[in-house]
Image 1 (cartoon, one colour):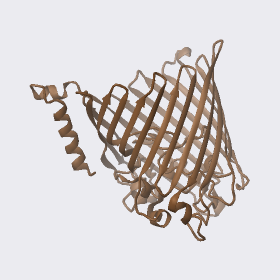
Image 2: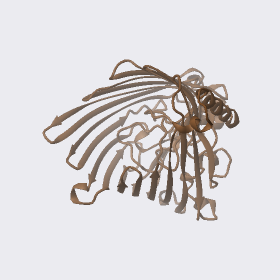
Image 3: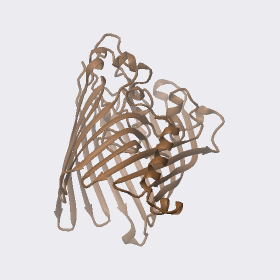
Length: 450
């Protein structure tokens, strides 16, 4: 569905929903308007001396954000639209020296100009609510472990499809979604969800140039326990099962939380047959992935400590790295490094990074401190460390993250982020491993919400 027809659908729905009002002003008087204005600076430096290549440095400035309008409900019906934009400025004239991860990196992967800003109608949907049933159709940002908005740069990723959920009781709900298109956060184009994952290799892998995603889920959450199950079925490509659970253990003044997760992925249909052929994209290997992770966290007064462990099991005869083409970064050991989300770039589904590579074992420690009780209201800091080991790596990957944050009320936030990754590791579609000696990244993010 193109932008014009979606816009027309939103307008006609809003007018229908307010057919009993007497003036035009009443049509929008109960609508909710929200959004944000964001400034983002990013600089990424790469030491490529392991491969005797020249070092690189790239940076970018951008300003943009979102403006959303959601109508009030009438007979259960409502509608919403969200305009999104990113606008680079003061960038280098040499495209190789521009960090396009806050501009149009995904547009560039499809042949466009990655250094150009863009504007897009990122959300445009109609919704219906009846008692415990919620249904919506159109473009929306969704947040699940394997498909996510992931607003870690300028804009969120969004999806186009049909979404439904039913609330069983105060603690449980079930859902079913049918999703056909995906707009990556650095793109203004909605691309078929399977084609986005596999790019120019879609037909070779699935036998078709398009397909759809079916997702069913069950969610349970009480005061002390939670349990989630997702089954994501991508036609003739991959079936992914995600399970997690957790519990809280109050202990005196401390709040302790324990969590566990399991992920299973297998190629299905035509992909299962085609990937097994000699000379395929994966080197003749079907997709077969099993991953587990554990996390323990404790909060004491204004401090929070987290310890996490993950393991992606190794299988030399299979494509054993996690397949995450739709901005999912599910493992508890995930860090804010620059490359973990780039599997969601057009055609990058079968690549992988660090803890997501088959055989990787990750151990992460994080410490977050709020300084309100020290008289510095709104200030916080986060220190995080991740060590990723794998028998396929020449050297362990080590991630160091430092974040200094400030929040004023609920509207304004400022973050300074420093990221250093020793032996930054990636796996190509056939499992070939490559490492950088050092990846350094610096970010300044100012965000005003309204």
